[in-house]
Length: 474
View 1 (cartoon, one colour):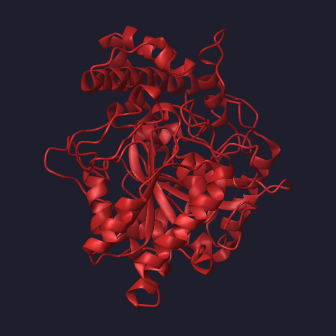
View 2 (cartoon, rainbow, N blue to C red; view 1 turned 60 degrees about the horizontal axis):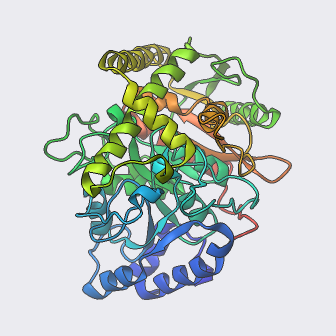
């Protein structure tokens, strides 16, 4: 089964459909790879082999990915009867009461959910190093971060454990690990995928669900299977024009693209990230697009202040909600240093401060929308530097917010699209001399995932990345 490890999910599903491979065989191969690779990577924190075998035995639905193994991030999409720790000791025994609607749609697509993957505590930080489970290691360099907060899924996909995996994104948590691990990662438009049935939205709409994948077509086909609202949702995304899989291979046309090689705060970018953006700009120009250097006027401190207030308030709400569910009183010793600092901050935020932060986010959305009336696509690096060493984000008792400050420096771009609700993607077009991937960040107008998929497929054809396999892999 290692012969199919680096086939994408579409190809693996085709093997099952043509009866060349049985779902049981794909699952056995995945289990073998998890058991062999996970001691080095620590990507998987909970195995669900019995549930996976039972799903196959009961008969899988006829969907686009029937028989393909899949992993859930241990945060977000719930699986009935299975623990969801959210990377925290405080909730390490919390059992999901139902399937999320997203999980139901994954099952209906024929996916075989076989494991849960590592995440930082409550997904709060841009690295995957929870105290509860320990660090996930990057398969390109075991001393480096996988990014966060979907770093466990990214390591599992990059190493060949599975062809794609569930991820979610509140400040870049799909795009950051995709960039760190050399994968494709698209954050959909706000509300493209429902958070129901128990949740309306998370942190005022900052958080979005989808996946990290090796191929563009897998991401498009999975979004077709999972997109859509459900009754009671507080708002919905604009209706898609046609199936996203039909955008893959369709010409994007001649796009007007702006690229930016500096941060909103005036901090310098790592030379490798500057080189990656300029290389991508040149490639886009060669492909016939109109490319120029330009940046919207973004008040960087306003973004940081508004985002931090919403992040802290959301964390406090989440912990207090979990306290009500579990009957446990939150205690400092139950949480990591940064989590507790954000919790205490969140408890002190007034309603006026909260609504001021919402207003700040909405102002930013207007500014970016105005900028993208001129430009179809906005290009930046995903990160300000290549994947950093593990431990870089550690907070200390003396500086509890150090990890958050360093995260803001590491990921200066991605949170903006969580604020604006726009779709954005990380595309693996560049590796530095040290062999580390540098993700390129492409942003489209609100509701225009179709444009991103068309462009991504063009880039994937022009500069294929599927053959790039990390040192620690199947």
